[in-house]
Length: 110
Image (cartoon, rainbow, N blue to C red; front, top):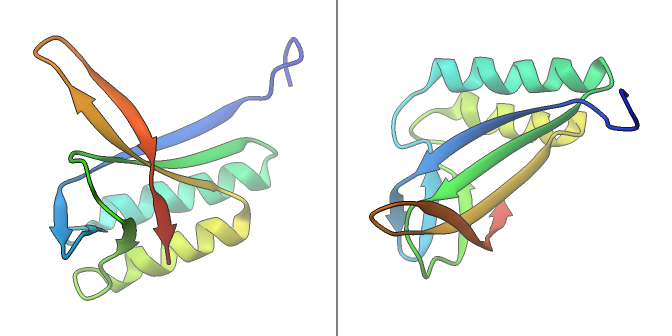
């Protein structure tokens, strides 16, 4: 903590794959994504807050889940992250020609 604030790390992932009202991540294998999640897990061991944030680039979705058949190791890493205390968050978003902003929280189903 510094000045009463706790330091944190965040990894942000953009999500564009939708199937039957669910959004899925990843849409392609991502060794780099797994590496980033492992880094967040290590950060929690060093008393940092850690966040894995999924920005869903569409509206009217029911939930976010991992697409295991695309990259099983990423799904396992997401489950490990939750066990390590990494906060998993997902939001849909809105956009205008000048900006993009997070809108509604979306449930994450592992």
